Image (tube, rainbow, N blue to C red; front, side, top):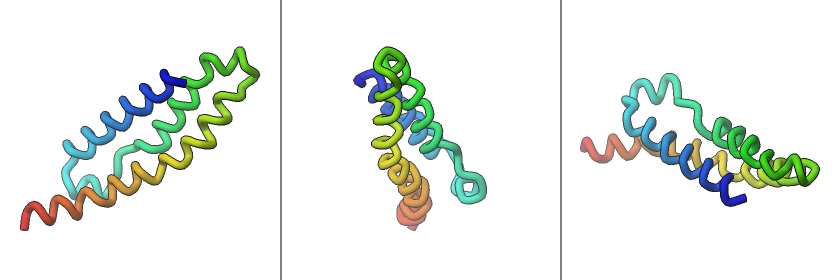
Length: 88
């Protein structure tokens, strides 16, 4: 499952960079996709060995990865507050 962690780490990095590059107004109006995309790609990446193991790894990744989704949402909600604090 190491390759799945690499996929999620890369997508988390990419999401953080997108948040950084997005203005606060755009961020409030239309947040960039992140959490569900990361979960989907992680589940797809787990299919590589999962096909040989009767789809057990994708089920495990999807179930445990669902607990990571709130971290992406929290980051998106927290960023405008931090930007306001830095501006003050």
